[in-house]
Image 1 (cartoon, one colour):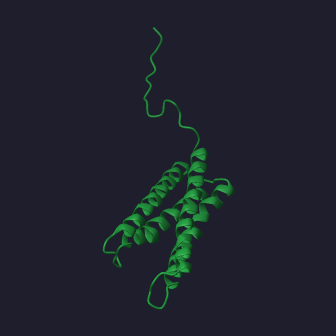
Image 2 (tube, rainbow, N blue to C red):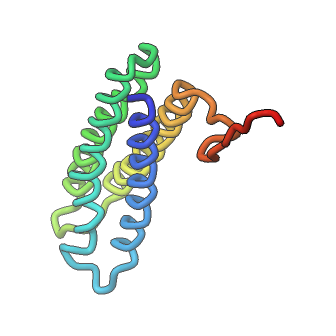
Length: 149
């Protein structure tokens, strides 16, 4: 279970890195239509939540220390918060649908929350690697013992 925790937490880090790339794709898509952020939404509302729950589950199954389990659970709340922040930012437009300073500030919190979530997942991954123990120097190398002559 400890190796599974290392693997799934690494996959979660990759998914977060991809999420930032997909946000940039949405931001640079021209013309910016309704589907500019479709991949960002799919990754953020399906892949990342699934990997986040799996990370927390594997931390518990690996009998990780309570602090590491709590750290693994924390991104679930941060991930749930993300679409709420985005909806609040979208709702903070003026009557003609133009962004307001308040809406833009709230939108910035969406990015900040994502950065915090990544930071937490880095801590989880480091803790998972430490829990799994050091990799032996001869890992993956078959050593054949011979009898003394």
